[in-house]
Image (cartoon, rainbow, N blue to C red; front, side, top):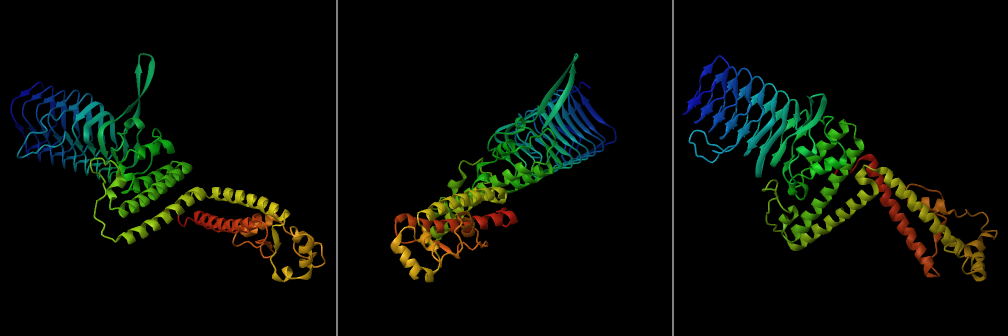
Length: 491
C-alpha cells in the first residue's frame, strides 16, 4: 500500500496463491503479469506511468481496477482467463500516452485490450471511466453481462471499440437507469456509454441489447453486420423511427451498393419477439427499398464503369465495394441496365401496391378504387352509346342495321327494345368492371359487351381504357397474390 515502484515489476510466469492487491501505488515502469497464475488482482487508486501487461494470465477470482486508477500506457488482458468478474469502475482513466512507443516484447496499439480473453462472470466498466485510444475486445468471451455505463470510449477518426466476434452470454448494457437517494429525494439518472469514434460489433452476440440514442456513436460509425442479439430490454427503444435512425448510423457503403441485410433481418426478429410486428414490417419494407436502390445504382454505375460512386463517402474503407474493372461490351452493360430498370419499376410498383408483400390490404383498397372508377367510366360510356354487344351475328343483323339508321349513337338501347334484344343480358357497369379486372372472374359481362371502336374519339378511348383496366387487374392480382403467399416479399 502506498508503494512507489521506480522500475519494471516483472511477475511473468509466477504462480501467486494469494490475492494480489496494490492500493495507492505508483509504477514508473511497466507492470508485467504475462502468463502468471493469480488468485485475484486489485489495483485501487494507482498510477501506472507505462503499461499493464497481463496477457495469457489466469485469475481464479476477479480482477478489479478501481478508484481513480490512471494508466498512461496500454492495459492488456489479451487471452487472459478470469474465473470471476472484471471490474473497471469509479473514475478510472486509460490514456495510452505511451501508445506510440516501440516495445520489442510487448508492442502497444490500444488503450484497453481484452482480445480473446475469457471472463467467467460479468464485465463492469462504469462510473466515470475514460478510455483514450482504441479498445480491442475482439473474440472476448463473457459468461455474464457486459455493462458499459458512464464510460467514454474516445478515438476520434478511428475505431473506438472493437467487439468483433465477442460472445456475451448475458446482456450488452449500454444504458441503464440509476437510482440513488440524495437526502430525501430519489434521483433517477440515465447512465450510458459514449463513443467518440466507431463502434464495431461485427459478428458479436449477446442475449439482449440495452441501449438508447445517447449511447449510439455518430453517423457512419456503427458497424452491425453479423451482430446477433436475442432481443431488447425494456429500456431500449423498439419503435421503427428510433431503430431506423440506429441503422442509418452504419457506414454509407453498408446501406448502398454493399448493402448489409443481416442488421435489418436481425432487427426484424428482435422486434417481433418484443411484439412490435407492425414496426418489424416497416423495417422489412425499408430493407427492400434499399435493395432496390442498391441494385439500380450498381447497374447504372457499371454502365459507365464507376461502381464506387454508389457508396458515397466511405467510413474509413469499412465495407467499401471493390472497384473492379468491368470488361463487358457496352451493349451488354446497356441490356443489363434495361433489365435492372425493369426490375426497379416492378419493385416500385410492388412497394406501392402491397408494401413488398407486407401490406396486402393496400392492394385490396387500390383494387376497390380502380373497380369503382371503372364502373363509373363504363356506366357513362354506355349511356352515350359507347358499348355494343360482343357478337358479330348481332352486329350484322337487320334489327341492328335498322337501329343504326334510326339512332346512330344509342344503337344498343334501340336494339334492346327489339324482339331479338329483349333476352340479351343487361349491361351492369359494376359487374363489367369486376369481370374485366379480375382474370379468374366470369360474370358474363365481358363475353357479351364490348366498347365501340367506331364513331367519336370517346368511343375509342373507352376501348383503350378497357385494356388499361384489364392490364391493371392482371398486374394488381399477381402482385397481391405474391404478397399474400409471401412468394417475393423477402427479396
